[in-house]
Length: 187
Image (cartoon, rainbow, N blue to C red; front, side, top):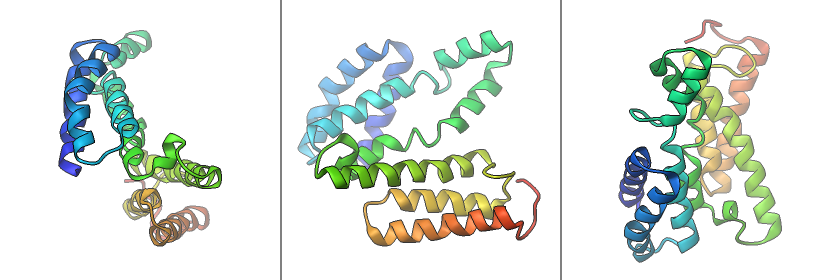
């Protein structure tokens, strides 16, 4: 399943680089959705996975049409703008994989479970973004970045054990940030 999802992601991104989001989604869904369904993925999760990555192609180099537009407006170089866009959206590249792991993100299941997983997902995105960008309460060092990244990813795994482990790692990273434990040089 993991290899199929990665191949689907790459295909949707490549198709989205050369055509509109709607066309990329229609072509990718018609070819890839039956294969994902055959592997046991629910149809809604498969279609949302494909659609999401067809949209994300707008900021994915080398074509990244939204980045070129933003760079032209800002008067900046497109390469540096693309790098910043990718770092800012690193958490967004993880969300479609969560559709597969947690159907609650697609509003399927008990309302309390949906609310719980939504809140855990929102909480998880902050440390993931902090680890990718290198800043939370203040600039982070390498250890804090790793704590935030691993903790945020652990929060997204569908298990209470990994949720608690992720919360502990994020809490350690936040305590290091708040109390200034360890080196304060940003990495």
